[in-house]
Every structure is written in structure tokens, then in C-alpha cells.
Image (cartoon, rainbow, N blue to C red; front, side, top):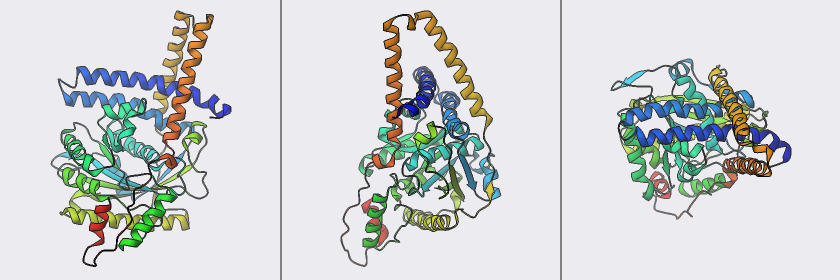
Length: 404
């Protein structure tokens, strides 16, 4: 990390990690003392506490870096994002969203990180920021502050091995049945971050199995999506299909650019599907998902050619709540730091100065870890097995499932 960048990033890191540790401490206390007595009460409290952390990320995108997130969707879909709408069994505003990106333009940041920020933006409008959930890789829960908060918030963590993950996923989805508040669950169906190397591997696999050859997306791993639909069909009314792209005229967004306060533009296309409209059988749901990704590919072709998704552009604005929360955290941190310096006379002795320097060094290292973790080129390579030519009677769909 260059020195000029560190001058900006370290103060933000101090604010984020100190406030985040307070949030984690409150979550841990509630988990130990309240959850054994009432899981619903714990979830309601955790929703409000977790929101104090996620609003800092929203502030980072909206106010610090001034990233412009443009949402393309029809007026009805946009309106429903902000209202509790009753569809099934009296359950309100609970949604499953699956996301892809044109990450040839944003592979410096990692597709799932940006999609989480986009998901936060939508969940603010729908009023369930603190109860936004996602299916994540297992290593994410070990990230300081963010990963710990995800674990307390009941995110679903997988190892990317269906033999190990099947029961974990089914159990986690079943737990959401009695979730006491509206929630969004983000599912990244491609299962890994997009890179050019992974795209080439996906194209080779598709060519050898007779599938449509992708140009801008990876081949979806349908088992997780099918499981989610089958387990949540009775209490989740709708699916939001989100496609994210960066226009060619915009700088490539990265975590480092965010922390430096450098802006970018993100285009998000949203399409809403009623759960009732999905096919009934698992095989048909899997094919529906694959067809959706073929449509996404064509949509991204259009975006590359025209620089827009073509749908009606909706105005999201910048939420004041995130600015108020970060301002409050900053004031509390400054006052608390002044008190600690006064009580312990930190800068009046070499020990105090060394302790402060070590603390800043640790925060700098942690921020570097977060930045590196977000980089897609550091993600696990896609595992694409060499295809074997099989009889024409075997469908390409079943061969893809075996691959997954």
C-alpha cells in the first residue's frame, strides 16, 4: 500500500474496525445471552445492530467515493422494492436474488464484493438492510469484523463442494422459514468470481458439451439455485434477477479506488420473477436458470454495444441514514480516543507511542487483507473438468450438473 493511499485508508480503517468491533461485541453478547432464550428476539436485535455496520459500507460507496449506482428496471418492480407486498402465506417482502456481472470490466474488485454493495443499496430501499443475507464461501466468515458479523447474522457459508455443502445449504435455507423480519438472500449462481481465465474455461466446457457458449458470464451452477427454490418456494414470493455492468466510459472500480474516494458508475439491471411462475420440477428449474443466464449474456452484449441496459432508469438517490450513522461513529470514536489518551497518557511515554504505532500497523495490515480478498484474480480458479464425448442421448443439462 503506497504511503499517500495509507494516509487516507488508515483513518477510515480505524473508524471501520473500531466501530465494527463494537458491533461484533454487541452481537456476541446477544448471541450468548438472548439467542438461547428467544431466537426471534435475537434476530430482531441483530438486524438493527448489523445495520450500523453495513451502513458504513453504504456511506463509503455513496458519500465518500460518490459511486453512482444506476438501476434499470420497470416502475412496478422498483416500486415493489420499497413496499411490503403480500404474496404467499402472509409472508411479506422476503426475496431471493441471483446476480451476475459483466466483470471483464471490474475483475479488479471481485464480482461478489460489488454485488454485495449493490444488494445493500436495494435492501435500503426495501427496508431490510440489517437482514440482508447471502450464500458465501466458507473462508469469508473469518474476515475480521465483516465476516464475523455475517456469521452472527446467519449467512450461509459453503465450501464449494456439493458433497459437503448440500446438507449445509438445505439446513440454512430451512432456518429462514421462521425468520421474523423481511429479508433478502443473495445467491451468486456462477459460484465463483469472474475472470478471463474462468471465462475461457467455461467456453471450452460449453463447446465440448453442446451448451450455448457464454461471452460475458460463466456457466451457472444450478444445484444451489434449484435447492434454494425448492426449499423457499412456500415462503419467498419473488426472485430478483440482477445483472451488473460497468460502462466503458467509467473507471474500473476497485476497493482501493473506493477508499481513495474515487468515483465510478455502476449499471444494475433488475428483473422480478414471481416464485409461482417458476417450473415445478428440479430439472425444469435448472433449465430455467440456464436460460436466464443465456438471456443475461445477450443483455450484456447489448450493454457493451450501447452503454446502457435500455430499461427505464430509476432514481435511487443517496440515503441520509448512512451519513448520520458514520458521523455518529466518527464523533464517538474521536471522543473515546481523546479520553483514552488522557487516561493512559499514551503519548507521554515510549511505550504508549509504540503501542499506538503497533495498533495503526495492525489496522493497515487488516485493510490490506480486505483489499486483497476483494481481488478476483486471487480467487479460487474454476474447476472445469476435461469433457469427454458421450452419446447423443445424454442431455447437455445432465452433463453440466455432473460438472458442477
